Amino acid sequence: MSAAAMTKSHLQDADMQAAPAALIRASQRARELATKTGTPFVVVEAGKLTKEIPKQGA
Image (cartoon, rainbow, N blue to C red; front, top):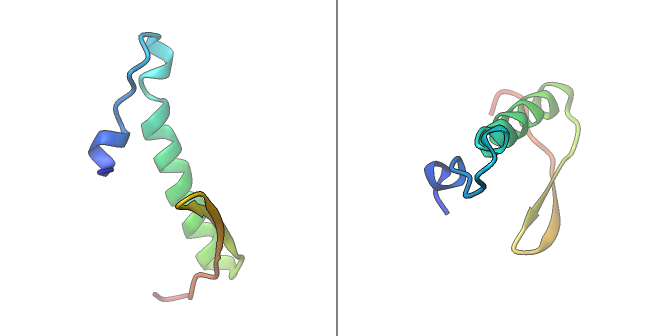
């Protein structure tokens, strides 16, 4: 699924329209923080938890 498709909500509630974009922004910030601090970043890929250890300067 593309990032553009993930930023659109199918929910009618106006407050929920911005939720997908907010989650993407939060994920990006969490990755940046994990990279700066060398902290593992856990994501779900294909239904499985995956721990990424970001490299600084990458």
